[in-house]
Picture 1: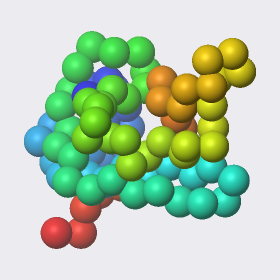
Picture 2: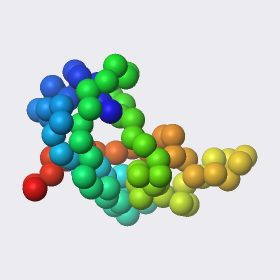
Picture 3: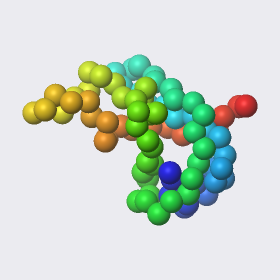
Length: 83
């Protein structure tokens, strides 16, 4: 899910197929085959479903106290699919 204004700024249309990338400590993780859904969320954010987006989560990035993966604060790039 993506803010409609963000989608427009990045020239991405609702329903368009994209892939997501996260980078942590120089390692790139990619998750493919996501369809853009415009939704009323804060600009600069996207929302995904889990476990589908688990492959974007670096396992060595964990919360200080609980030691759980930091799945709620992953920085991603959105790229148009070439398919």
